[in-house]
Image (cartoon, each protein chain N blue to C red):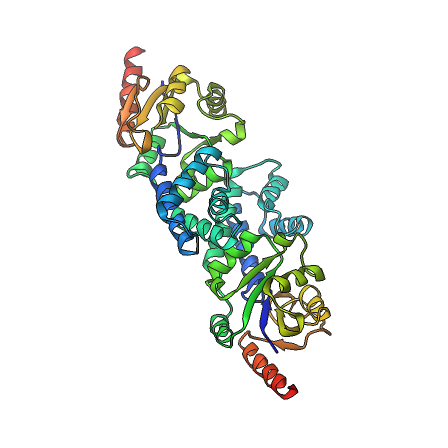
Length: 232
Length: 232
């Protein structure tokens, strides 16, 4: 009996990869315009290396970029990049098509809905609120709160526990095989992989369902409910 | 011979007190709407106490407010407050009337212009860039960079040094008697007090000029230039 759905956030509920890429590129362009004396391609290479080394939640990517190119701290250029990044984020952040309609349908089926996501709590909440979808979720569970992220099974168990759900009565929806689908499957959840974002071509031997759009979830839940009825 | 002008930022170049007050009030209202179970007046009292205790650059005002009312961390409510505060800031941040016109006139008189301000470097730059006036300033000097803020004379000397200006050839423009005008006067700068913001009624025995609008600066500079010519 399906009682709830746990969603990954980035690239599952909105186009994270795409928006982050555009925001970073626009930020770099604005920094060059403000005096960062470097070609766009070289700046992007250096920035991508910094993000790879320090992780995406490091918080000083632009500081390091400017320092590595100019050899000094330049607050005008750094702040210009931060403002542009933020402006683009606010402008582009929106849910995938059908997301809100689908969430309404799933709620009206009596399901508990939760988000379980790697990242900083306030940053992930900011995305949900700006996306205008936070009200649909009974709980939002972040790796910062637990101290350990995906693909650790303990993190998923902690999330299920907070939601009051057992694995076998829970659908898990995510975009990554390695960090989302594999551990969720291992715990006994029903796994749905959404084919979006930069991992959409990842090799996959773990997902129960693959979908191109969130709205396909409604039919999956309906089918699973019919199966339940037949079993009993 | 007047060669440059040093400006304070908050309440001197834009209506800081007013915008911060509105942004905080709107943020508190949005947090109550998001589930912060308290009256508006009580929440504002608690928030003002936190700001008084921790200073305005503390960075966790809303965290502490929510914790002190609900007894727990609630990221939904905190993030709602942060987003509202930020949205109001972006919407309301604009220079005082005549600021840009005045800055253009002062630049065309061949003067060096600088900003010297207490606060975090990136935050103060963000204001200047969002105000659309950062391009007018030859340098922006912050207390975070120097490690010591107003009214320390060393901070003002450091600013003059970075600008390549001597006190007697520099006009200082600020809103506070205690933190701006008194130390600037002590160093030998020509002091102009702008009567704006929450300190506009402060007792003042130190300013050479008092103005209601930045545009009055143009006449003050002209008069000082005439005096110079007569002296020589």
